Amino acid sequence: MARYILNRTIQAVLLLLGVSIISFVIMLLAPGGPTDFLIDSSMLSGEDLAAIRTAYGLDRHEAVQYWKWVSRVVVGDFGTSFHTGRPVLEMIMERLPATLALNLIGMVFIYLIALPTGIISAVKQYSVFDYTVTLITFLGQAMPAFWLALLLLYYVGLKVDLPLSGMATYGVEFKEVAFSVWLLDRVRYMVLPLSVVVLTGLAALTRFMRASMLDVIHQDYIRTARAKGLSELRVITRHALRNALLPIVTLFGLTFSVLLSGSVVIERIFSWPGVGQLAVDSILKRDYQVVMAFNMIGAFMVIAGSFLADMLYVVVDPRIKY
Image (cartoon, rainbow, N blue to C red; front, top):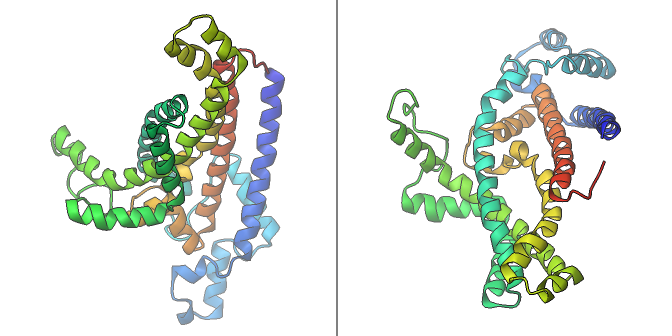
C-alpha cells in the first residue's frame, strides 16, 4: 500500500505540472491580456502601458513568469488577481461554499434517485417501468444543461414566481432573521439551479446503474444463489448489488471533480455566486492568476477523485489489494 501511495503521489505531481504548463501556454496564446480589461488602454501612452505591465511582471520572459508562479504555488500562494488586486486563494475560498452547497446537495439527490431507479429498472427489465425509465433517461441525456436551465427560467421561474438569479435576498442574513426564514429564502433561490444539476446528472447515472446491474444478475453465481432457495430480495441486495456497485464507485470518483467545476454553465445562467462563475469572469478578463488557480484546483480534484475511487474499491470488494 505504501509503494502504491508513493507511486500515485509522484504521478499526481507530474500530472499537475503538465496541466499547469498546458494551461499557461494556452493563456499566452489567447488574444488580449490583463491590461486590456483593467482600464481604457486607448487613453494611455505606451510608457504608461509598459509601466503597468512591469508592475504585474508581464514584461518578463514567459519562462520567468511561469517559474515565479510555480515557486509561489509550492508554498500555497496562488498570487494576486490582476483585476481586483485581492489574493486569488481568498477569492476562491469566498465563493467555494456556494459551489459546494449546490453540487453536494445535487449529488446526494442524484445518487438517492438514480441508484434505486437503475436497480429496479434492471430487475424489472422490459417492464413498463423499465421502458419509462429508459425513455426519460434518453431525454435527460439529450437535453443540454443550458437549454434546460432556460426552459426552467421561463416556464417555472416566471410562472411560480421563484427567484431567477442570485443566492439570497438582500438583507436576509443568518444572524439577522429567524433560522426558518433564512433557510426558506435559500431554498427558494436554490430550486431552479439545483433542478438543473439533478436532472442533467440523473440520466447518465441511472442508465449506468441499470447496465451494471443487468450485467451482474445474469452471472452464474446469481443463478446459483437463486437455485439454493434464497429470496429474490436477498439475492439482489446481498449478492448482486455489491458487485454492481464497482463501476459506480469508479464513476463517483470521476464525478468528484464536479464539486468544483461541474456547474460553470449553471452558475453563469442563474448568477449563482460560485467558483464556476468566478472562473468564467476571470477567463473573459484574462485574469491569468485566477484561471491558473482554478485549473490547478480542478486537476487536483480529478486526481483526488480517482484516488478516492481506488480506496473505495477495497471497501466494496475486499478481494482487491494494492
